Length: 535
Ligand SMILES: Nc1ncnc2c1ncn2[C@@H]1O[C@H](COP(=O)(O)OP(=O)(O)OP(=O)(O)O)[C@@H](O)[C@H]1O
Ligand SMILES: Cc1ncc(CO)c(N)n1
Image (cartoon, rainbow, N blue to C red):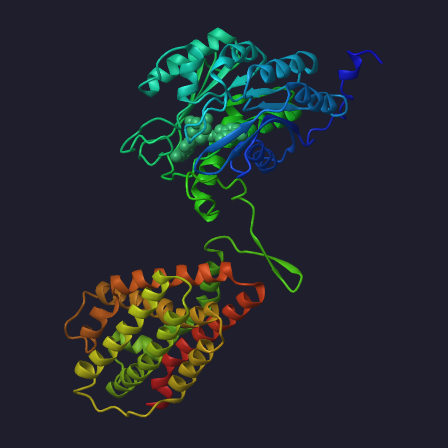
């Protein structure tokens, strides 16, 4: 076998849906947010098969780089040769190179292997401000640029590559991008991550300004539909921007390789438009990772459903809002049943006998006393202080409403003070949920009293207003106060906490939550029907 033929990769089987094989030639970030670790996650997140030839080892975390070790460049060549002798590589992403000998090794390999897609992220300085490329290696890097199909410098790297001051604004950065494209004959992606779009503090890792975050593709040789394609983007207010550059370049390389496989031609603009929203959501979801105390990593797999393990069985964690939406669906029939009740219809049109209204008020006061104790129990076992405070406040509110009922509505009425059968069953059900030991089951059980009450209130209030809010209506005062904006806000909060509890729960616990919620929703119907039966 000749030396040259040993570099010829096996002919790939033609298939439109082939998984792109993407090689990252980059440094290691042991904290997992940047470097090859980020590259492999990004490649996988875009459906590629990731490979990694390591140029350098760094000792770093989310606060900074404390040491860099560059193994002999000949060993990098050995890694690269091992890959290209065996595997067809659809795309290469190049990241941290460290020093000139490494750059020479990569260039030597690219000359032989000629991969179809080469994206070069000219990594020089980390987010934390630490050098990842020796100053003396800048010239060597220039010799590598013409081998790239896409170069992805940030604003500082763009300036260094051109030997110019850092652009003061986006227009200046685009001009620099054009100059670099002309100089290298390559397409340049100008990244807006470091633009100071608003109230940012200017600290290296602080992206917390409120301007946009555009990126732009620039070239001068007709590889794009236009010389300049600006892709606008929303700026995510987070300091978790560690590795955004690495993640973006690997993702683009992967999508470009996929497009090449599907259509035979790449499309940088399409690749960028696909990757940018993914990166935005990865930044948005970064808090969920809770990694490190500095500039944390982005959540590469934010779009993948989380799973929980229970009794050796894996179950899907519902997407945010999905559990609450399912509960709401389950309660639709109950809500319709409530609106069909004689009690509600008569309350709305004013024909409700006073005796039934008085019964309802007296039972409501008794119910609220029990409900308040159950809410206090939710406060006691709440997982966060915000939730503790919310349930404690709700418990207090209930007691205040109860005493208000006695002070005003009930003081002038004669109502039977004995606990009615529906009130007793409903409160017993809530008390059972409160000793179930599950916070999720407890909050699901108390939710219908917020949710259905708020929705019934809104409908009745709306009907009352639509009828011209007649003062002569016997229950006018009651109906006027029924729809309360503060209560509606508390209801939304209770729904959100229940949804979050469901996402943290096991599948079995979620089922128990659903059951507890449905039973309470049923009791809401019966509670409104009780005056007709028991007054
Ligand atoms: N706060 C943010 N909100 C939205 N997008 C962002 C934000 N910060 C960076 N980006 C995007 O991340 C990508 C990388 O841009 P950036 O200019 O940060 O590169 P970089 O400095 O090379 O990254 P790194 O932090 O990994 O060194 C770009 O697509 C940019 O638009
Ligand atoms: C290994 C490595 N490569 C690139 C970067 C740039 O984010 C980093 N911090 N670490």
